[in-house]
Every structure is written in structure tokens, then in C-alpha cells.
Length: 184
Image (tube, rainbow, N blue to C red; front, side):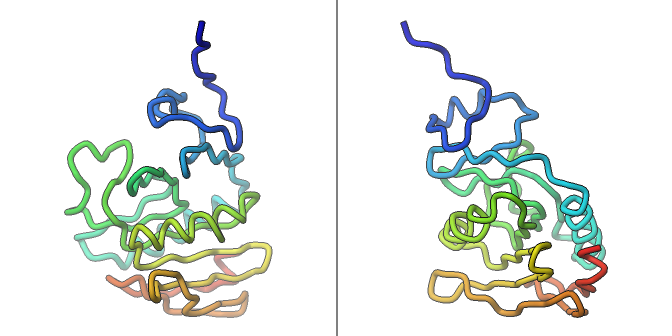
């Protein structure tokens, strides 16, 4: 007799897309290369950075775009939960309420305990999916790094430290960010 799939997420556990979809809705997991990537609940600083960036970006976006924190993005076989995502409302397809299946204009990740996922696995997968703008906020290093695709891979375009006040290009708009204020 085959046991039913466990509903408790286990880091690195291999599972089918159907098993992934059967997990409880409040489970914070991503589906990368057919395996679960489990993230702990973000801390206060992490959430503050996410909200501050989302509000700042939202204030400069044209009416054609929206910013949203922690919404699933499913490019192909994987599913990610970017900390901040900017997308063109015209590319959000019917049925995209659960997850976005187009290509966002920007994804921002705030580094925490899963640094390798954000800096290596996701970076490669995001470039493969054609994401044009990727930013990483690193509270530990006190930096905000912007990336652009060069020959199919991300290359840093700028590294902004704690003392920087930067105008950041997200392709469709420019947002001013005081890195010290952002990092708290």
C-alpha cells in the first residue's frame, strides 16, 4: 500500500507538482527543480525592507504596472515567491490569482537564511526565465545590489552601501532609495 504524501514540508524533499499543490496554503515553500525550498518566517527587518521597497516602487510605477510582495511566480516548472515583484498588469493572465505565470519587470530578494538559493539557484533560474531586472538587498553586508542580464547571466550593475542614496532603474521607472533608511 502506498502512503499518501506528507503535508509537512521538508527541505530538499523531492515531489511532484501535484503533491506541491496539495500542501496547505499557509506553507511558505518554493518549488525549484522538483524539490521543496522551505523558508522560515521572515524577521521584522526583512519584512520592513520588503514593505518599504514595495511602497517606494509603487509610488513611481506607471498605471500599467503593479508591485506586490510575496506572490508566487511560476516560470516553467519552478515556482518562486519573490520578496517583491513588479509586473505588467496586461501580462497577468486569467487564473493568475494563485501565481503569476508571465515575466515580471523586476524581482527583489532580501537575503536571510536561504542565501544560497537567492544568490545562486534563483539567480540562475531568474536569468533563464528572462527576468530583466533583479535586485538583492543584503542586510548582513548592508548593501543593495542591482543586476541586469548580460549574455544570459546576471551581472551586477551597481552595489549601493549603507550611505548611498540611489536612483534605481527598474526598466519602466526609476525609484530613489536611501539605503540606510531602507536597512533600518
